[in-house]
Image 1 (cartoon, rainbow, N blue to C red):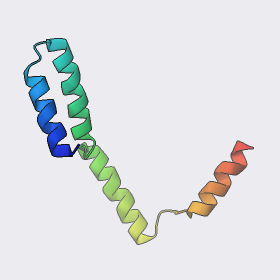
Image 2 (cartoon, helix red, strand yellow; image 1 turned 45 degrees about the horizontal axis):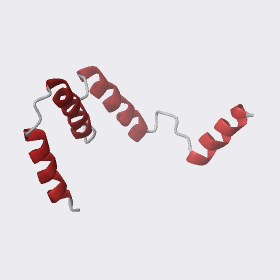
Image 3 (spheres, rainbow, N blue to C red; image 1 turned 45 degrees about the vertical axis):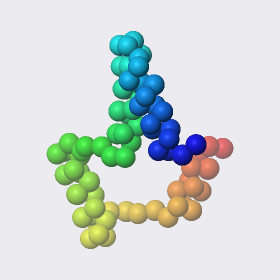
Length: 78
């Protein structure tokens, strides 16, 4: 079944449902799924990310390779 057919079927089925609690649950699921593609940053979050990005580009922040992080994580696990 294609996504188009699935969407059409879902629309038809949902349009016939009168159960408000069920519809609110479906709405929550659909809203959460739609929100997975993106999210809003607060001004503080954006400023912090901009600061960290600038520090990274300037070379003033410390960076780690994946291998060193993995090695350290495995070392503390033991």
